[in-house]
Image 1 (spheres, rainbow, N blue to C red):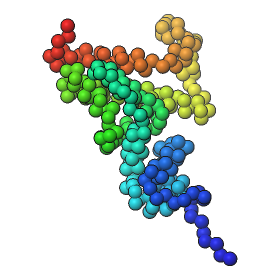
Image 2 (cartoon, helix red, strand yellow):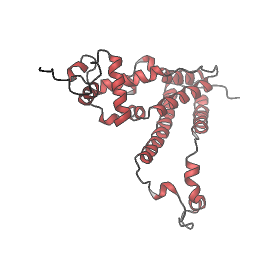
Image 3 (tube, helix red, strand yellow):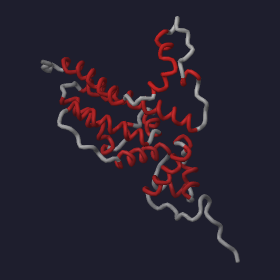
Image 4 (cartoon, rainbow, N blue to C red):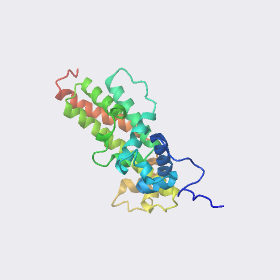
Length: 233
């Protein structure tokens, strides 16, 4: 008896019929292979459906990435925000850091020009919180945007460096000598690094993001408040 041919891709999984199922399949693919290898064709294979089925829900890869980012942010539980504007900035930045640390690929995608601006309003609550709190501190719009951008660069940079370092160790790639120790350096040329020596990996591995964030925010607000004509006494 002739058997109908199975759909190309994984068997035993029903065809995708909703955007939620598509996003779940895309998350599996990204978690396994990385976002750079995410394509509509590979997603269709992963899901066991034809690419045409996917195009009923998404336009292209960029549209898919935006949907994934919106979905990821909306899944995050919003923290209770403090009353003070400076503390609200810190709380929103910490939430942003935790969200990116949980899914580092999102930080890479969001470094591409235009991606932050394509997020839904509901997914931009962290940006809105920082800018609104900066306004409450007396910042001008330009200062508020500059404050957020500085926090964003600091946060994304920290996430990407740690993520790439962890990925390299997971992949079994041997780290460069200078990543592991400064022992043996010529003390006459770089005396301070030579003194740190093989303590460098231990010191560099410490989680100093919260302290750095507070120092960054306080420094920027200290510059912005006088410029906005606020009383600093």
